[in-house]
Amino acid sequence: MPSFAAQQSLFRAYDIRGTNKHFTDEFVQALGHRFAQLYGSQRSQFTKNSNAHAAIDVTCPPNNTVNFQQNIAAEIIVVIGYDMRHGSESIARTLSTVLAQQGLCVIQLGLVTTPMMAFCAKQYQGHGIIVTASHSAKDVLGIKWLVNHKSPSSLEIQALYQQLISHTHYLSRNQVEQATLDSEPDSHYINISSNTELSRALLKELPAKQVADVYIAAIEQVFCQLTQDNQTAPTNNRKTASKLDLVVVIDCMHGATGNITQRLFDRFCQHVIVLNDTPDGSFPLGNPDPAEPNRLTALQQAVASHCADIGLAFDGDGDRLMIVDNNSKVVMPDHLLYLLARIAITERPDSLTSSLASEVLFDIKCAHHLPKLLADLGAMPVISKTGSSFMRQKVQHPDSQIVFAGELSGHFIFNDGRFIPYDDAIYAALRLLHWFVKSRNILDDKNALSDILQRLPAMVSTADHYLPVPQTARTDCSIMEQLTRVCTYLQDLASVTTHADSFDISDYRLDAANLPTALCASPVCTCSTIRSHIAVEQAKSLLPAGTRLSCIDGVRLDFAHGFGVLRQSNTSNSLTARFAGDSMDDLKDIQATFAALCRPFDAELATQIIAMPAE
Image 1 (cartoon, rainbow, N blue to C red):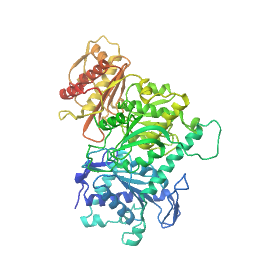
Image 2: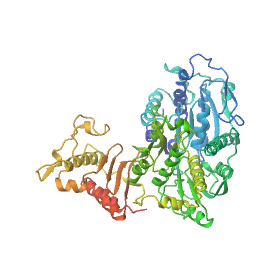
Image 3: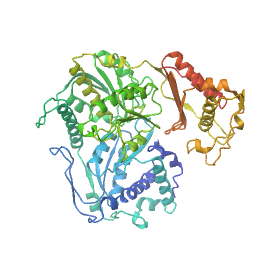
């Protein structure tokens, strides 16, 4: 009887992901039944009165010349795709079969990017699954999914695991493989697993060209509309967007974008050079992660050799973007985020100008200059904890006023009504290219991308580094909990006027109401902390007046000339750290401050912080 205890580690904050050995046949089968139950529960929300096998004509708006015409014999429709990893296709087909056996219509997309899966799901009911581990190493597999257009929260992901283990406690191995969910009192699906012909009828496979055609047509319509919006005189004639006069180099990193990149960018740009566009799950040149140090070297060299205007890099599943400018320099993702936010704000449709405030969401790892740059655009900068799924949830909230969201890792979401509000690297790249050419034409300015970036504030920063989590067995709290508590105390101490020369931190007890809710379960924190006397002047030196502390996701400190952040990773058992300053001296000072704060807890962590090099 499988307990799936080993699979618990797969259920992460954003998705299901981990080493391929844990994706056993029994686990995938059982997981398929849990997904069937999850999607089956949406039936009552979809329709309360229709017959379970009523035919549904599903079309793909907005372009009726190329569409998905399907006669669907089920209420619930789920699209399923997979990436290029060894094992992804097999998992996708198993999940498809299980869902079809439970009466759900499955549209098989084949090898697609994650954003393409989200786009296809949008054309139906917003339900979709893609088997992908994104930018992770080749021995890692993963699964992402949407329910009613929305990504699951971390609590919903953990709930799925609890449902998985609670159900399989009562099943033998054969029962897991043959289980039908209609025996459960809360079941919402139709059990047709015994009807092979009907279950096969619910499995529909779309040709790859048809999926690509609809996706490209929708993007083309966006740029046609942008072209019309920029015209002085209105016109009712649908025009084809002209090709952009740019030389563009693209590195697909042997990921899922390779299947569509050449064709799509040839449609929009005059000169396109594509590198590593054969999807290959063995990743012969390294992990498909454009944010890894030195991972963009080949792209930089190609930009130089082709005298290109820009270089683009996509991660394994196509939801992250990094760029290289015309001087072969890697563009800081903070600067890229600013440029894309600027595009979203300045190119908002007239229909949104009065109804949507210009809020821009960015994650806690972005540099200190970004909020001011966004404010100068007339936007309201809003900081968020790290995680593209968190950002999508905020963007999709009914009361959202967010026109754009982005994070340091390269996830960017346009929420201006022109396309689906999803972090699509290909779409974001095309919006950037279109804006770049348009701005040059309007200003009759042949400035290169590097000239535009040169006007942004100077900054020296480290990369987003992963550091080992220190052992804190002698305390009740993690290093991040202790650091949060001490920084909060030091900020209070530095801001008060007192005649005392020092305070004993070990006597300080911070009320839990002043801490992030995840830190302490008891009303008053009683965790052990460092026992040392800190003078008021030392507190003011570590956290000077005006220093801003954020604890929404780890510890972030914004100083007058830089910032630093240290947080627990959501995807691995490690800490992530990033520091930036207006100059190298500012950067070193901020690293020294964080090292001083961490040294009482773990001297090795302090040493690692000091040693982090500037990019």
